[in-house]
Length: 132
Image (cartoon, rainbow, N blue to C red; front, side, top):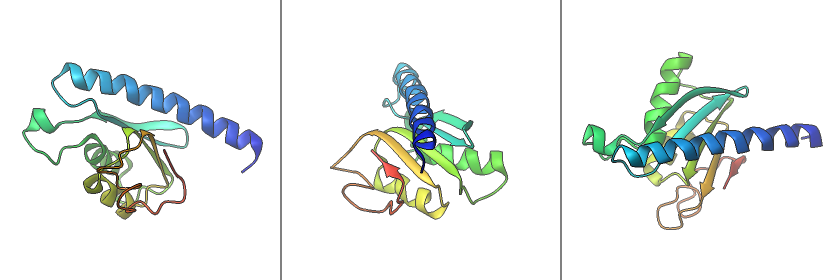
């Protein structure tokens, strides 16, 4: 990757992560844990969402899983190659598996989670471009 490409990617990552953090603040305001997710492709937001665990009364409605389903519908495909998933906290094991299975190209997260992390603890995200 050239320096220009790296600079562009880093700027995009910073902007998308800032959006993710803003969304996580909204999540907390509506009674959810402060987690949010943005999925982008070719520098454009495909979907963004909050945690929906409390809203839906379903422990599987983490922001990342909700976003993956929304992105598949928005793009009309199960294959999310070329997409980057942004989340404010390292994805848990449950969320990491569909990231791998849908072939998301990159996962960028704000802070790690050594207790539950699908990347740092369980190594489910063997994505070479996973960046925490």
